[in-house]
Length: 210
Image 1 (cartoon, rainbow, N blue to C red):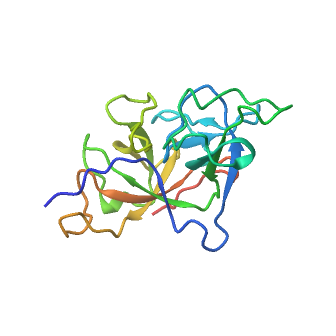
Image 2: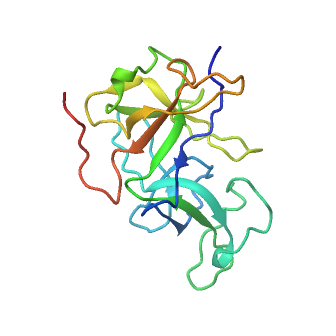
């Protein structure tokens, strides 16, 4: 049997337990934001889509897990993601047009994400190593499912490294069950537990040595 193909970016594990938390941030109108997508908080103070790519050290703020409208109320329409029409430029003197993204932003937050099918599959021996992100079929172009709102983002199996140049750290194989009743297993579309390696609220990244 094979693993389910369920591409939806980074999904938080046990959010709200212990000291793990999430916060709202005003968003910029520069790009659409999808659930499960990593974000950054630049000097301007408005959350935007995070940089991805294996050759770039991405310093992420956290991952998008929800949205809200003016004064953190519900959006006017139940959009599953913030598209260009929702991302009106924020106006500090008025709440008109303001949009918020809820971000799982704790440096210790763990996430589940699906592996792609390119290159050699990630192995159990790769646990503790770093790994990069890839939007399915588009390299680093930000994409998502406009119906479900989830980012079409996976971890790039070919990017696994013992160095710290990638954005995530592999923590372990996710303990889950596929739709056919089989366990999540190493191979194509395997689900892995990861954490952000380069976090805007964390310290310098390190990886365990042998």
